[in-house]
Length: 352
Image 1 (cartoon, rainbow, N blue to C red):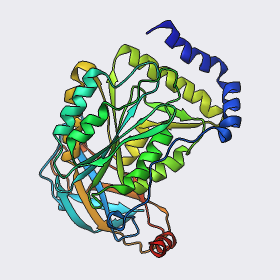
Image 2 (image 1 turned 30 degrees about the vertical axis):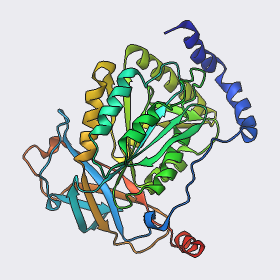
Image 3 (image 1 turned 90 degrees about the vertical axis):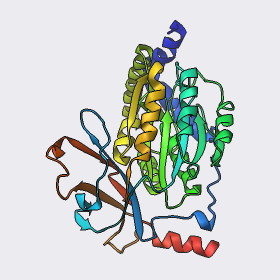
């Protein structure tokens, strides 16, 4: 890594206190990033004010990460806020996918290398015709490069329109990127399908000098019903940059700046963060898509009739161990969802 690149991190570390206060005081006057149009058509409204709640679940062996298939709904117990729920829908690789790819263009190292480019094209080829894909990028602001399309070639062509890597943008504004992607997910053409946001980046943490908080971002992602995944091309230089970014984010958090954690958001939504060397990134991306394809879709009608916009905790557990080594199996799913707000839903109906 060039010495000039080190300076980009050393300066924020040494001067992060006063610099952040200055930036925060000026943030109200800075231009906001262009937000995608979140106006929804009636046909694609799937707010959780409706009765059925859908969640994805990935079951794998803890040590080998091998997928566990051939499970039945009788193998699971589902709880909402500690109350057992009746599973009304259960399937695997049946519902279509709505995928949003976000490419990080900030930082010292460009995670979207030639290897990542070819791996992305190969991964897109493994999706089904009924799966839709959208493309975002972010550095100093967030940009919608390609709206949802079922046409794979349109998305592949959009990869060539990604903005140049911005080495001077070192903030990695994860909150804003995830928030805007979650808002845009409301336009998904697969309202009853499975939704996933995949971030291609070189770091695991970031901070925003303005924009949504981590809590606001988390709520937006939960409300969209999305699973968050991360894909990180690993190298010694990448590990160094990621470590420096964690350090800067830690200091920034002390000064009240809005920080964000990719692993935490992935854990809360039941997603994965995959790290792999550039030479093997195609296989890693392919495995990630395979995991998305083989996740179980579980639907239920909440026993809580209130539509108060509250956060409901979810827990998916075994009703009976599917094997003797069930304690060595991992169930990855989201930790909860945002209940629909009846007042807000009624207001939207009146405006349509």
